[in-house]
Length: 563
Image 1 (tube, rainbow, N blue to C red):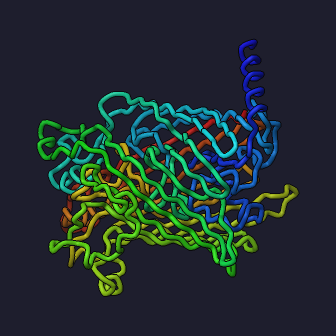
Image 2 (tube, one colour):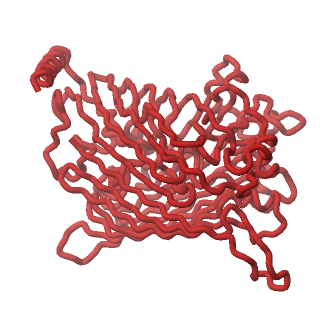
Image 3 (cartoon, one colour):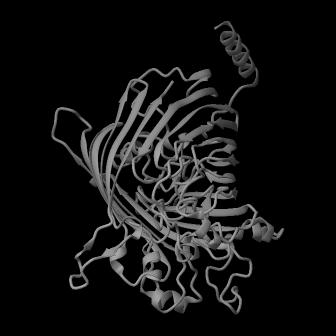
């Protein structure tokens, strides 16, 4: 106690001598239980700046105009500030302590969980941190410790293991292991940490925080928090830049993507299928990404955006500015690609456009993202085969006020559709499956997990979510249908009854009490044709076959304490 008191006295004295200029570059980490969603709902209720697109996250305190972003309702007296005070020009603050837990009984399930891995069995993550700011300089240290039981399970091909076809499409074209080693998994991550220089409304810094680009809530095609955050330099807005034409938001990042360190599969008979594995290059990948959002002043709440992403092996990079900032590379292959239609620089590129329209008067929002995995040759190619290599997310949210004695109670309804499977153009031309790549053979991943939509390559998902909400509290149900990698079935199987479909129902709740926030969920998943397995019994009846189904239970519990 004496040492703690002495530390506070010395720290306060130092800060008093130096002074602060508060810029509030503090962030709410992507995926924070309850808090990550409540501000988006508040915007639909007219309580948050309507010029925020909610398509470039993490959210910054400056944009939310909150003295304590972890207590949007002001329900408790915070003791997190250990030097200075919130809202003044001096601040050192303890960040919330967070303990996340989840379990899968039969096979890995779940996404948008950052540094956690897809695994069977019990898994836990612990994080706590500190935020300090001096004038325009800030540091946020919030490491994460992950432990996973990582039990074996029945992977692709069952006891035999993956086939050559699986390696041709997945194992040798993306770093997405079926299992992260044999035995338990543990790792310490830098987590949601950053060092920044911020001059309102622009911030320049180095960060390992998770990012989310796009308007989707369950999935985002080019950047989500399914994979762990990667080390990157960032130049971004911390709040919308207002001009006579409207408001602008944006972010430019350049970072380093790492290998998982595991082979494609350690399940089944590895003595047989490991011969199909072609070792990947021992080289890290450079990632460059850009997201821009514009809100016209004439249409309040409407955000229009663009995302471009590039990744390439470090050893293939040149030293020019265009290698580090390739955003002005033409979006058409004509004049850029070689005679073989290949990118001479061997880059994995993605592009998307999106919109989100928040309508507080209707307490509703609609949003969509349209992306391409393969650039068109020219404008004619774009116009005539617009759906080639496309992926999209479409969603709608509506808040329905309840007639009750409790003010602020609503029924929240959200429906979202994500489509990544190949279209009919696959029958007449080469079709690149989302997130896999024949040149960048680690695919669009970091540390073995997809950086885009967590449903994974060639997959589709549809979800409907209905919940009761009041402030940070909500209780709800979500029904979801996930169709795993349809491209795999379309390319290698004649019988289309093999599609692997997960039908699930999730019951969940978020509840706050004083400094605590608890988030709990219990999900039942029924897998039709698990791992694309199929056994025909009666050839005279198309639907008379032996189902190869499997049940899975996924549960999670997150506890957060706000100091």
